Amino acid sequence: MKKVILTAMLWGGSLMAAPCTTTTLDVYTTTLFSCTLDQFTFKDFLFAVPAFSGVTPLTASAITVTPTITTTVNGDLLGLQFSSTGFSIGAGQSVTYDIRYNVDPQPDIIIEADDQLNTNTPVAPGFAIVLTKLCVGGQWLGITPSCDVAGGVHTLTVFHMGSSTGNQLTDSVTFAAVNRVGYDNYIHLDGGAAGGGGSSAIGGFSNVTVTVPEPSAIAMFLTGAAFLALRRLGAKVR
Image (cartoon, rainbow, N blue to C red):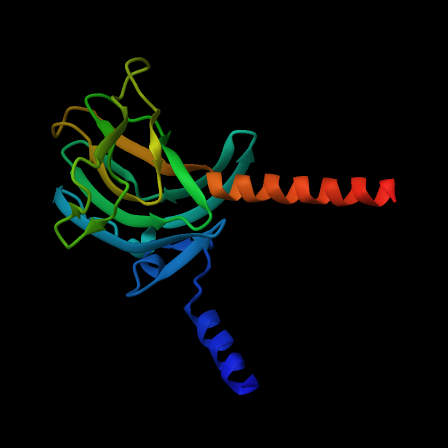
């Protein structure tokens, strides 16, 4: 019996994903790769270059993924930042990158998704846009992405239009609590027409998943706290 139990423990441990670490995107896009942030599983990473002109596109190995966890009074912020010195093009050049992945929570629930653009200030007529399609309550499936929840698609948009005004470097959307969410990011850099003096450069961007404790977990905590309080009270009475 002991051998059976030990085997089951080892088998279960082998299925657990390792914590997300700072490394290049090609590691994240390895077949069957997954990792965890605060017990959430980040998986199904995909990288593609849907379109480009006048420039040699970056490969996944040139993009760095940096995971972050920030704890606040309102919940935990689980972030993945995608950065590269190669997110930079000149006039007459354009490129679009696609970075996609899914998030599966464990004990918590997801109530919000945020985008943050780290810009190196494009020069008009050059500009930079990150459009994030969210599959709220579900996940992106297939090479041509399809959200597996009807009506679950939401969008976030951050951009810098190459001027000192009219830019949007953060965006967020809140929704009723869900237990899954998928991110499909389209990073479009455009340097404007050749000879126009424009350029487009960003340091990178971040997706932030906002979570709160699951109601059942809160109820269990409160029940446990009440039980301990009663035990202490009983001990004092005796």
